[in-house]
Length: 20
Image (cartoon, rainbow, N blue to C red; front, side):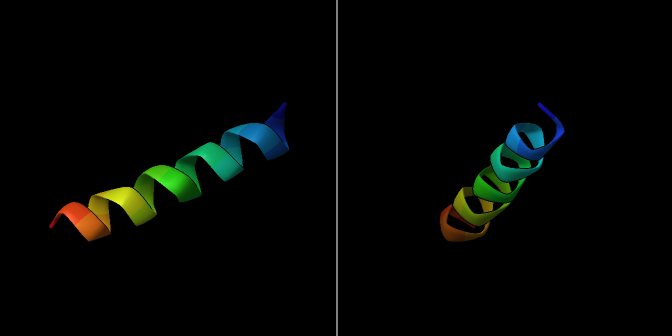
């Protein structure tokens, strides 16, 4: 579960960077 959350956070960070 921890790894999944970390992957989700990384994905969100990447998307946020692309949006900005």
